[in-house]
Amino acid sequence: MFTENPIKRKKTKKIWVGDVAIGGDAPIAVQSMTNTLTTDVAATVAQIKRIQDAGGDLVRVSVPTMEAAEAFKLIKQQTEIPLVADIHFDYRIALKVAEYGVDCLRINPGNIGREDRIRAVVDCARDKNIPIRIGVNGGSLEKDLQEKYGEPTAQALLESAMRHVDILDRLNFDQFKVSVKASDVFLAVDAYRLLSSQINNPLHLGITEAGGARTGAVKSAIGLGILLNEGIGDTLRISLAADPVEEIKVGFDILKSLRIRSRGINFIACPSCSRQEFDVIKTVNELEQRLEDVTTPMSVSIIGCVVNGPGEALASDIGLAGAQNKSGFYIEGERQKERIDNDKLVETLERQIRAQANKMDKNLRIKVTNAS
Image 1 (cartoon, rainbow, N blue to C red):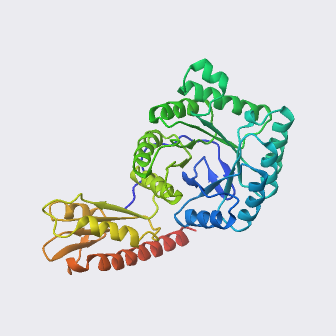
Image 2 (image 1 turned 90 degrees about the horizontal axis):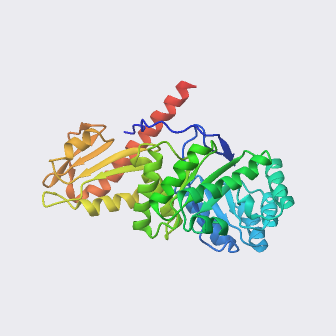
Image 3 (image 1 turned 60 degrees about the vertical axis):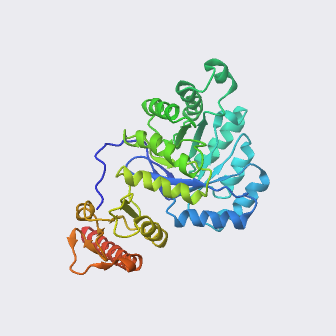
């Protein structure tokens, strides 16, 4: 049972990355970045497809050389999801991937060099309807800003971002989004707040170089959670030293927790204690693995005893309240006459959850059809 967050999101300019809308009233897009060698076309294509299967809306691919640009051409031909090319400094690479059908350029115009090179990239992007992402990072600020501020600060990140924004404004190009990432949570939050007050273009959120799977997820949840709950942000990437698929999962978990966007199952589970009538942790872990393919937004509560079990079940699409030998089972808040054998929980729950997901999907299709 999904209830939207009442926080009003800032209305930004809507741009399009391929067929995915960013900003305006569009859902907050979740994206990741490949960590394969781009020149290894087969491995990169396989990873992109895994990211897409996990629910990713966009995928960024690093294109550091002309050889990588030629590989990008083949990658683009073999994938369907919109691709963002990550480029630094060399304007010729940007022009080449634009020729090959890139959906967005991640390139900072101020770092390209001469005016004619900047104009060449911007004119190409305009002609081919390719948006640009300006990406400012606390770890790679311009030397003069490092000297001016002494260390990365929110104001330094803002000043860097606005330099690039001003270039695009001067060239009458408004199809862009901006990020001001830092590895420090509070620095990133302050920088995004400042930037949000200065421009109306979409913001790409992220805590850069956040760390491993656990610490990175925590830092990202705190930083992005603060911003999203203030209505700031139009797309996000969770930067983890982990499989990119995990970045997509964490991104959707953050959005689900804030009741902003729901995809797949929201498992509600107790931490378990001596009252548990079955192995809660093992049951939930197995169900999460078995049901990763379910995309229907739904809530499933798995509680090990009758203290909190019935209450959580009443507010869930599927609920389980632990009891001796057989546990109470609920569908849409209604307790079912038959209980579930505790030694058959995983198999039975998987079957019931899939059936409920199919029912919910069917009801949604009927609702959409009737509305149209």
